[in-house]
Image 1 (cartoon, rainbow, N blue to C red):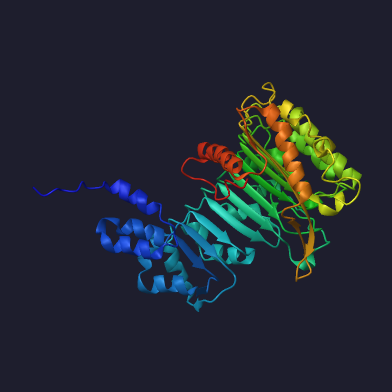
Image 2 (spheres, rainbow, N blue to C red):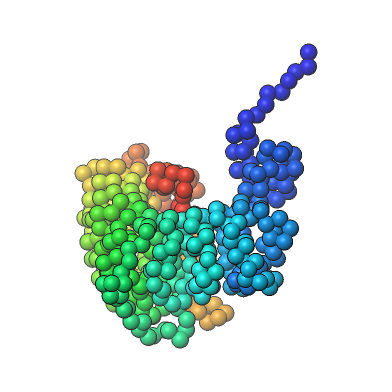
Length: 448
């Protein structure tokens, strides 16, 4: 009797297809040709990303899809709009026909506010109402109500870098009148604010202060990159106060310290940390600290001593602290042979973190120290880059491992740089995001 092979259920085959990377074009095409039952699943992987440029043109790939089989656009879930690149000119009516097929798009990434305005004009937000994630590169402050026609908006990523002619000037904030205030139909669940400017005052989202508790009060994930005093003002005076007693579970603050506002940042951040009773993951990164600047060093020490033990966190499960020091800071008496743990003020960190009255649910701790310096690029801009393999960095990592491991015990994952502990720490963090997001997860979940 001939042996009959068992038939694999359709659901399992579809999950196998979902595991194939988007760039495995040959494999996905083979799946589409092999079975009529799996062709839609393969197409959903092949055509999940769609690319656009101006509202009067189409990139070559998108133009081919629209020209030969526009119905394939129904599988698109992520839409990318770029201001540069090769494209074909098309009439505006063609763009509107394309948008009809893009009702299922859930994520939009666009690199220009002017392009965003153009696409809104042709009906993007009115048709693609399923968009829940929006990433925008800003060159100017924009009104918050620009996003009001997105009823399901949950994630907002803002990358702010104003035009050169704005540098050094002030952009006035004009609060709308009471009759003009409109409450948005959504409450953000995730906000990622990234500043790329130096020395410019700005308030990226222009809205009435009365709306801030509604806009930011429901945040679960908050990711903040701050470079200047203006970023500090936007975050500390608007975003964090509006998040008080919110369901915030993950908080990441990347900060480029400046001697004039270090102390204000530390005290304000500590004050607001008390108001996040549901916080499960905290990530704080200080970049380019200089030990020879006593204000910066003492401020960092005070902040860490206050943070580690001064702010009880009943829900905190993972803590990630990174300090990046300017390599010029340690050319003097302080060297790799010095008792660096005591110098940083971290000698009692392990004992405090194991205090169950302060951190009853702590599962993972990551401490990272980098040494680097400022490097001038070809465009004359200066960027901070870590130095790989620094003796100081290696010595401090060893001291942290030996000091903290004796206190932490086996119940807490301690990551100070090895590949094994990195993997364990990331598993804990990912489990936090899995529980918070379920099926819909932010793309930056492991980086918060």
